[in-house]
Image (tube, rainbow, N blue to C red; front, side, top):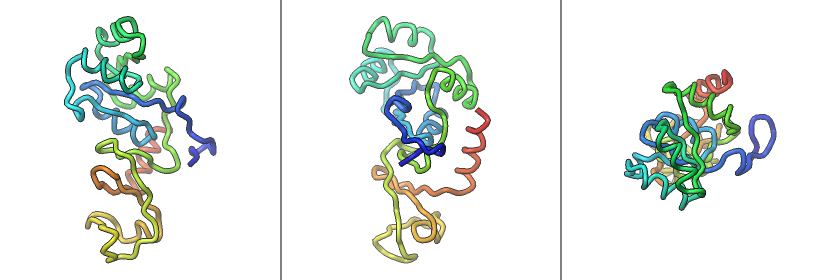
Length: 175
């Protein structure tokens, strides 16, 4: 898999991240950019100490709008790296992450579910009506046969490149 610029993504370009409760919309964008982006509320975590523990245990960069949490994370636990986000708007937050050295662009193919952060698998060569396809009604007929599609291995959500993908790509190109 390569990025739109033809280069292979690396773990250094897209380290796993943990987003605090104030960054839910950002989690979706980062997942579309190929990040393993765990979101505190998805994990049932709100307490700062628990966020730091999970970030350290899973070697995740902590993304937060909480100044105290960001200030304490690196000093309180050297295993936790944190990025403080000052902006509320998700595109401005993405600009902050780009300025901090994180890669903010869509990969050629999705790797994570935008809904649950689970890994996605490519769905190819499916015939319309094929019972093994387990295709939800919302999926266009040409996905998996004429154009590629992806399915989350954890929640079953389907993805394909369409108008939403193009809209997100255009927004990210502005950054």
